Amino acid sequence: DRHPEPQFEPDPTKKTLVILGTGWGSVALLKKLDTENYNVVVVSPRNYFLFTPLLPSCTTGTIEHRSIMEPVRTILRHKKAAVKFYEAEASSIDPDRKVIKIVDNSEIQGATSETEIPYDMLVIGVGAENATFGIPGVREHSCFLKEIGDAQQIRKKIMDCVETAAFKGQTSDEIDRLMHMVVVGGGPTGVEFAGELQDFFEEDIKKLVPEISPRFKVTLIEALPNVLPSFSKQLIDYTENTFREEKIDIKTKTMVKRVTDTTVEAEASRPDGGKERVVIPYGLLVWATGNAVRPIVKDLITKIPAQKDSRRGLAVNEYLVVQGTRDIWAIGDCAVAGYAPTAQVASQEGNFLGRLFNNMAKTENHESRIQELSSKMNLQAGNSAEAAHEIESLEKQLRRIKDIKPFRYSHQGSLAYIGSEKAVADVSWWNGNLATGGSLTYLFWRSAYLSMCFSTRNRVLVILDWLKSKAFGRDVSRE
Ligand code: FAD
Ligand code: NAD
Image (tube, rainbow, N blue to C red; front, side):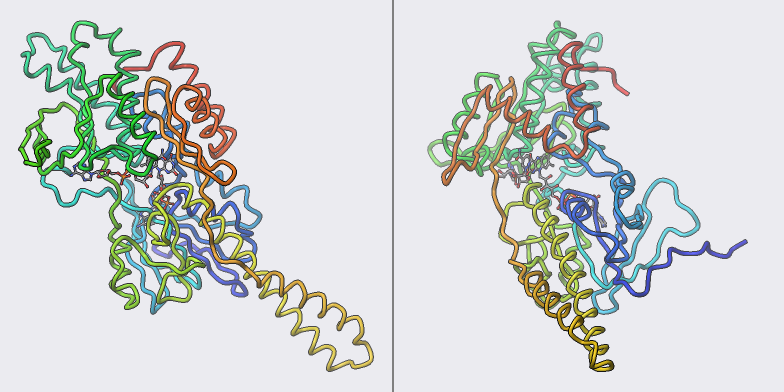
């Protein structure tokens, strides 16, 4: 039987709201949205939300990856009205026809793996991809640290390097290379990963593979004169000093130009201002040089004349509407609203859109009720006092609802773990800024991230993982 199954029938009295992505922005929107007001459709190749701030801890097994994932279907189950979810990638957006094309790129595919979805309103929350700046060899030879799969791959590779270095008769040069873990990019991702790696070494590898452990080395390469450029000077110094104590080698003013399967080639600035070429052998290479624009966003930019100057993502106005469109909004890392690409910004933007859409639906309901009452009043003139009263009250509510202030980001602070149970924090404090680093900040970091975890289930799992790795050491078996 080749007849397609009956499709999800959208309610024709409601607008269809399509949301792309299940990351920080889209999930914050879904949490806030009164789904009964729209036909809501969510499209994402990932059927879960990922709590990225704890992803670096998954690379060494301090936290197990499933503890920081929350299935979308569980999130949607708690919504008042049903939301349709399709595990697929949106491959193109047609703003004229108001349809998106979606493709199932997963391992298992059915007879239908490509289709179109029409929308009345579209929210783009597809995030960003890893920047490589077209540097040769990066895609082929390094690991990124953005998705769960990346963290799993890194975890496997670290132990593969260690076990291969411990192989009978391994040459000395090869042991040094294999035990050399190189991180490119001194932003928070690179710094947190380097810190986690050093912890793993100090707390586990040293005990488990003592014969080769002195050869384990972590190097962090950064093109700028210092790491963590977005943190305050005092915390940059604190991080660099802590890394020195932890024996993490920081190579600043060093720009990676090429990567081979065993070496990183970089251009380093000498103190005299000259440049020198350095070749660094590595066992594991993690590439963390920030964000690049996803193809679907690049493609949409070319279709909207008002976006012709957009380079870093979709330019949006203060209500997060994509400039040059009326019914497309963008949030998070794929939107350019004048803020840093962080989870904090993405979730506040998603939350804002949730409130905005709830208000828009209420406005429409109120307006149609007012119209209904006024036509009734015209028909039965005698009985109009009650209706007039209701109209007055509705109009009053309407003025309040319609008065939606534009989006404004409220910065709660920046936090980063730097290894050896220390963290750095730039936190907004009264009207000023508080910069702190150390073990107390680490406790603050732990409790802050714990409180931000998506669900109680996630929170419990993360606590158990922390206790487990402390009590029994990290699990170094390679799956
Ligand atoms: P994402 O959360 O990346 O979500 C994008 C979603 O879109 C995903 O579900 C993806 O599968 C989906 N998608 C991709 N392509 C398509 C497509 N074609 N069609 C449909 N869906 C698609 N920020 C902080 O504020 N604090 C931190 O401590 C912090 N730590 C971090 C640690 C790491 C290791 C990393 C990598 C980032 C960290 N960030 C942190 C940054 C933060 O994770 C991002 O800014 C945030 O995820 C952006 O949210 P988003 O919704 O825009 O995108
Ligand atoms: P980033 O953009 O913050 O840092 C990338 C770094 O790589 C830059 O300092 C850049 O100078 C360097 N770089 C680029 N090309 C290079 C090259 N060829 N050789 C050497 N160095 C090179 O990237 P990120 O750390 O992945 O962070 C991305 C976003 O996510 C940021 O907005 C960040 O704030 C956020 N984030 C936040 C946290 C946190 O708050 N704890 C953690 C991770 C990520």
